[in-house]
Length: 399
Image (cartoon, rainbow, N blue to C red; front, side, top):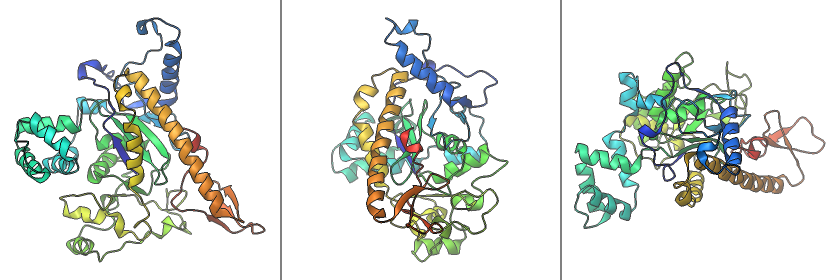
C-alpha cells in the first residue's frame, strides 16, 4: 500500500538544493547516507556551530536516500531519480501519464474539508461564501485559469514534496522516502525497483502513472506489462462488466502458492504477475481503470483496509509543527526514528494477536520469515496464520 504525507515538508526552494554531477545516474548508497546522517546528529552535540560539523548532509539530489528494510531491498545501492523532476528528459507518453491534470487536481479538491476549501477560495480570489458544494463548483470552474491552477497545485503539492511510504496492510512500514520536490509516481517507482521482490499487488491512487514510470525505468524487464497493471484486458465488454459489478478476477496464489512457480515469480506466491489497483473509494475519469478496483478480487475484497494508512498519517501529522521548523537533516533523522518506534508498536500488536490465534499451535517463521503456525506432532502441515500478514519479523525491528 502506498501512502503520502504532504503536511510534513521543509520549505526548500530549488536554489537551496545542490545539483547532481553530470555523470550521476540516480544510484545512492543507502547505508553510507544514513551512517553519515547519524554522525551529523552526534557531532551536533560537540560543536558550537553547524558550519563546523564535518558530517553535515545538505539537501541534494545525488546524496539523499530513502530508507528500505535490509531484507526488502536488493542491495545497499538504491534509486533516487528526483533530479529528473528538475531537468526532465521524458517521453511524450510519460508526460501524458504523470502530469498533474485538471482531473487529478479536481479530485484532490473534492477530498478536502470545508475550511480548507474556503481558505483556498480566499487565496485564489474566488467568492468564499456559501456551502462546501458551492465553493467546490466555483474552484472547479476556475481551475482552467493558469494562475488559479498554479495556486491550487502549490497548496497540495508544496515545493518540498513531503514523505512517501510503502506499508503492508497490517500496518508495518517497509520503505520511507523524503521527497525534495513535489510528489510523483516516480518516487514510488524508485522505491519499488529498489526492492528485492516487487509485490504482486500494489495499491496506489495514481496507478497508471506508476505503471508507466516503472516500465520506462525498467524497460528491459517491463515489470508491469500484463494489461499495464489492470486485472484484465481493457476491452469494452470487460469494462462494462466491471462497472456493473459482474466481473470477478480470482488470484488464488494470494492464498496458496502456485504448485509450479512462474519464471521470476515472487517467492511467496510463485506468481510473476503484478497489478496496480485502487481502493474502491478512489474516483477516476478513465473507463479502463474500472479494471483496477480491489473489489474485483475475491481474495482482497474487504480485506485490505485503507484506514491503516490514514491512521499512520494522523499520527505523523501530530509532529508536523516542530519537524517543519527543523533543519532538513534533523527532519529526516527524527522521522525515521518515529517510524521505527511506530513499527515496533505495530509488531507487538501483531505478535500478541498471532499468539492468541495460535492457541494450541506453535508459532514459527518459515524460510521467508513469515509468521506461521504448526500443529504439534505434525511437521509436514504448516499453515500461514494470517494471509494478510506478510511481514518479516526481522524487518519489524527497523526501518
